[in-house]
Image (cartoon, rainbow, N blue to C red):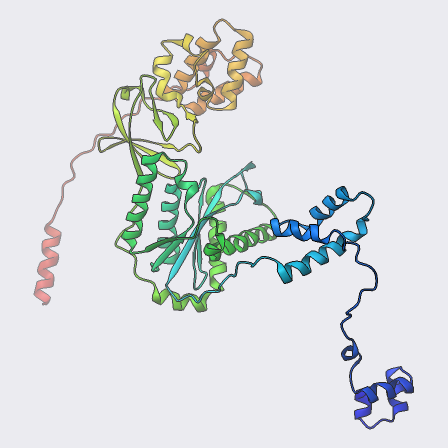
Length: 486
């Protein structure tokens, strides 16, 4: 109506075009305000307040515990005054409580946005990825990701891991710096690393803190931590956790499958995704890259070292887990270098073997190859061996033992122990194949039957190498020719 009047239309014409009466047009022109400007806040109640009588009790409860919710207080009121309140009045009480909190409630914590400088800080933390439903070869792949983020540019790097251990932190930090970031900021912020340090004993915690200080000193970084329980102080990496996992989920949906052939294929998928995400941050990354300090000459490659004796059971105890070692080491003291996924065993400075690291505590991993040479001489010990279940390398071996128990119960342990001895002295895959063939034909997989099927590896003849005759005269002629041209 006002636009039409501004064009020079009469009141009647403007009213017709606006779809209102001429009288309404005259009223609005006389008042000189829009309809929304004519509304005044209501200062009176249209109906009595149903909570007026109990409101002092409600405010007393809120002053005692401001976190109480309206639904909880409404339920308590219904218990105090049965039949007085109806379900539809809950929203009225919630509005009353919201008004009280705005006028008289406790002060809320204020988050102060920070100004970040290029090359100033990096933040890191672990995040669980199991909710994404990744499978490798059809098997669920529960895992975590170590996540490092540069605060200014939000350029990120990730590393697959399986626990929030100190070793996973160190290896993830160095891998991310060297393979993706390519430089060193001035500060590194983490949480209190309670998940990595708390499971350790007092000596282990002291060593972990010392090694972390050595790591930071090696890169010239200032280590900082957020206040206990205040996650937003590590907010950049916490926010990137959510964004990264959302991006992984969307990429998996676009891919059409959460199945990967192996861990290497899944790791390539993550690295390609990180690379694409970092490409969108190039403007700030170019500024931050110039501000980063150069990397040291080599990674520090820190790890925890423990010295453990080998028991008469041919086992060692590492971080409250049990591992078997070759029986020839019984009585020796070994040096074990604990890494995030493996244990490296040394005798002095001589490397002996590398084995997968067990997660958690009170776990055990017994390799039948380490104990079979003694067990084959004492087959009766197999029946009640504490770690007997570890002596079934695969489901096929377990099925073979069950078949022996069913058809030759008196000699089942004797046959099975010799089958393990055959697998250790020849090839486990061939023994497993022979067991599968016998089981498929419903034949008892005795030691003699399996031995007849397993191929004995032929003795390999080492070729005799003759000492080569070196003729250096060609180099003399070449050098003489070069000297003549000079």
